[in-house]
Image 1 (tube, rainbow, N blue to C red):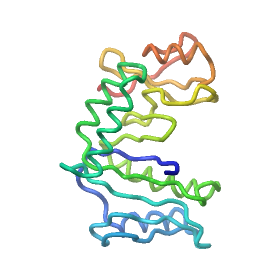
Image 2: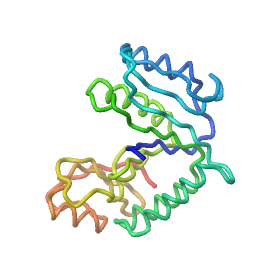
Image 3: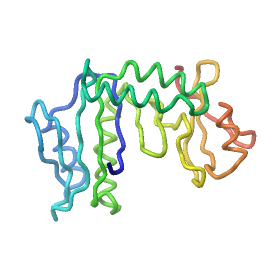
Image 4: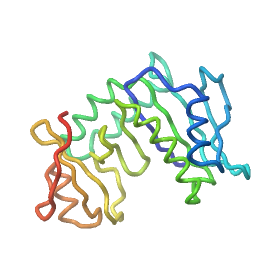
Length: 206
């Protein structure tokens, strides 16, 4: 299957190919987008690759409609998060996923393993996410809220290092950076609370 990250958007609309191709070329001139399936106005699959033809990522646009692949993906996500923590994040995410109308799925390929390729992929993914009303999902990590902070735990038990997290308390997001390998930080997040030795900033309401 490979490794995927995704932008999950509440918007049925999506940018035309020319717009995002120009963005990639302007910010990362060593990389370009080509259409693999679809047309410039109704693209289905794009390929991000370097000028050296090393492939960085395949990007699929999956509308969420009755009987669609996108609808199946949303259903799988809702099933997958049932046993995740914190429960406040899971409940928020269930409601959010029910409103998702478009999934942009990034399959990371060989070229994404270089810093330059990873930066080009990140720029494209961020451009789709920053259009608004969207969250990010990453295999083996979990989901963010609309402000880009991770809200449920899907990491492996051996993970460590700093990570930007968010917990929902009284309808307001509290954002903080924690050490994923710190057992106290991890336990607090699982309970849906900010670790005692950390300070948080207020995000938007739910």
